[in-house]
Image (cartoon, rainbow, N blue to C red; front, side, top):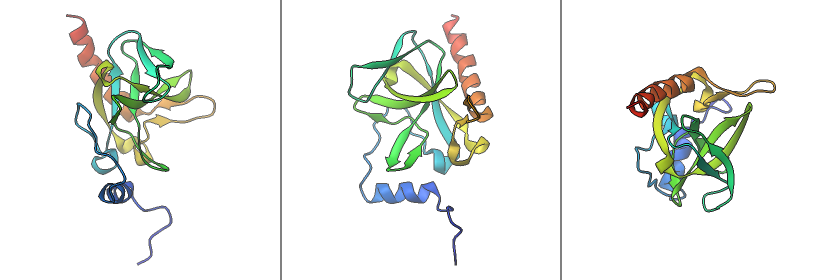
Length: 160
């Protein structure tokens, strides 16, 4: 049976890499979400004002400073060009993506500064949480719904 070009699913690639022992196991303090398998991605809300986003997983260089309530999406590089949108801890940090003036950027953060949530992958192929457009990238509706639900719960706690 011939397979259409580009139809190899990410779960097969991810499973192959894990079975081959080429990917380390996650050690995050929250449940790891296999976005491609479960149809859900993982984002987070920044909890403290002034939370730093670092250049890399072991750098002290701060690339971006976040405000309480900012949204980020987890990014985990599984292989050379294979990414999943989940929070995955490495060296005490998680790699996250965020939007800055319509541009998608990536930094590393302390997981203690984040409160995670999941979002439905139904809005975009491969669970991509944003909708690129000419000049300005935005979170897609599925990511926005997950973000808004989490923010509502956190704001209720913060108000107390």
